[in-house]
Each structure stands twice: as structure tokens, then as C-alpha cells.
Length: 485
Image (tube, rainbow, N blue to C red; front, side):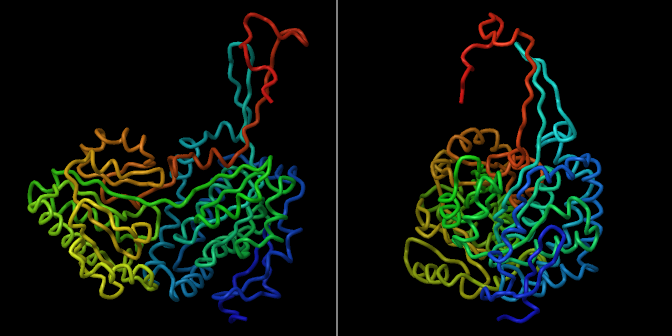
């Protein structure tokens, strides 16, 4: 068994369980399989206590949580830093900076904007009536019992899950990832320290099980026990989850994505504009060590593909690499656990004429400049501050590379965005953003082309019709919607 220092507690609705921890390799934790009956909220009516809270009261609680998530004073976050920085995605300095942003995510104005723009507090606090052509319809958003399979590429995902679960008045069983099991547990423990009996604390559980554990997943992924699965998973995780889906369970899938940049010809009209675009591109690649789906992997540059254009692309690649190296250590660093598969791919092309590799000798990252308009064949492995600059003859050509797996597209200059955003959407792109701000995601707005908070609730409808009972053929009624199920 690993040391007690590396034990991740099992947290079940305000109770911390540490006994009988099982070895999971890099950490130990009480096995979920031994606590399934406690993890399951068997009575959905037990959500009544959180539905008695108004949105303003929920926001009050979350603002208070923000004050308790001060990384300088919170022992749980400090322990998470000590555990995670040992060979993880981020250095200790970066983790401290990431946790240091937690209170700003829990500011009152941020939470109010999130609710109103993504769902609407009126639908959470009560029934909202609307006059339709043939009836009065009342709608209300109710919370759901959910399993949240969160990703390990950002500690913020655990906090986002807690925020969304609270605002949607749900019951969350959070499955932590094996490469970052500490953050969500630290947040849940902070909630317990702050208000152990509060309804919002009592509707958060944090646990771990190995993906594919049939005993755990068959029990949890059952429509008698949950209504929704919110999964931030890789392809293998998604395939594993889908085999358990049955009527009554809604899978809200935030599939793995790759992000890109499109940099127009204006960037190369002067040395000043090229340096600005390179600095912005470096930020999109290097911030948070390129761990998130939002981070740029492939940069399509409208330099042209003749000899002069390739020379411009090479010069731009040099500047982008320098920009990555110049990022402050609390937002980017040589990768603590550089991917060995990616390293072998970089070495495999280093001496070919088709690509020019800048950097990549150690863990500092690299920029691979294609010497033609072709993406490296290991683009899906680009990570650890490694990116591919691909010269193209036109922006239209760059758009042809986008697919349904493209999440964020950084654009330079901003004036180009209005010209390409419709085409980006048609080809699968899900977010268009100013170059240099790919990682400035914020809480408000769609994620992976869906309004997450709105998908987490169950929309309940109450119809009032004034026609006589059994009367189905009034000329004012909307036709064609009888017996739709």
C-alpha cells in the first residue's frame, strides 16, 4: 500500500472515509465497491432539501466556499499541491497559481452571470409560466442524481463540477481521475470543514474506481440510481461508459478534443505584427503546459507555401518557441512528465527534410514547422508544449483541416473572425476566440457546443388546457403532437 500521505479519502455526502484504503498505484483510497449502497442516493425525493434553497442562498454558500479555498491557508489544497506536483502535469508553482484562482471563480458576479446566461435563476427558483397558442405551460429546472467522470488535465474541473452541481441542485458522485485524484477531494473536504450539514455539502461525494470496474459501474450506471452521467473522458472512458447506458440515463459527453489556430496573412505584414502573433500563439500553446483541450496543437499560418512562405513560417516557429520559453513559471514550465511516445515521434522526424524541429531536446517543448502544407501524422499526441506550425496558401485551405474533433480555434487578427466563424462551425469547430486567449475559458457560455448547466438539470413541464376533457380536435390546437411517445 502507498503511504498515508498519498491516501485520497472517500467522501460520501459530508462524511470522510479513510479506513481500509486500497492501493491504486500512485495513491491509495477506500474502494468504491465497498461503499456502493452509501454512494447511491436511492430516494430521488431526498433532493428536496437542496430544492428548498433559493439560487441566492446557493450563491451565498459558494462565495463563502471561495473564501475558504485560499491556497495560502487551506491545508487540503496545500496537501493536494504536494501530492500532485510529484511527477504530474504541473509544477508546484503552477499548481499554487491554479489553486490561487479558485476564489475568483467563486465571486458573486461570476456565479450570477453563469446562472442567468446559461440557464436562468427563475427556472431554478420556481415555475415559469408561458402562454402558448393552445395552453399555458409552466417550466421548472430540477436537479438530477448524477455521476461526474471528470478529467485530470485541470484541477479546475473539480471546482466547476461542484459549482454546477450546487447551482443545478443536483446530487453528484464525482469519479476522480487516476492522474489527478486530489483536487476534488480537497474541495469536498473544505466544504465539510465549512458546513458539514449543509444540503450542498451533503449532496457531493468523491470517489475513485478503475475504469471498467463492472461491479461499480453496473451499480452506479443504473437508471434506478442516477439520471445523468456527465463525462469529461478520453475515448476509452467514453466507450466503457456507453456500454452501460439504458433508457432513463442521459449521457452528457464532453469528448476529448484538439484545438488549433488560424493565423492570417496580416500577421506577417511586419515584424511587429509577427512578434505579436507569435507571443499570442506561444500563450495558447504553453499556458498550463498545454494540458487542456483548449490549448493549441496545430497552427495554420497563411504564409504561403513557396520558398519565401516557408522561410516566414520557419521564422515564425522560432519566435513562437521563444515565446513559450519566456512564459512565467507559474503558468508554464518544462514538463515534469514529458510523454515518452511524443519524444520518440519528435526524434523520428528531427532529421527529415519534411519538417524543421525547434527545441525538443529535453522537456522544454518544441515547435515543429512543416516544410509543406501537411500536418504531422502524430498530431493527436501533441502535448507538453509541443506544437506544429503548418504553412498554407489561404485561410480557406486552413479551414479544410477542421473537424468535429476541433474544439477551440484561436484566430489572428480579430477582424478575420467574422469572416471564418460560420465556416468553422460548419466544419465542427466549437469555439472561436482571439489568438492568445484560448485558455481564458471562463464559466459562462457553451462548452463543447453544449450549455452544460442547462443539460445537468431535468426540465419539467406543467401544461394547463381549457378544452373539455377528451376533446382533441379543436381547430386552435396545434396538430400532429398527439401520442408522440
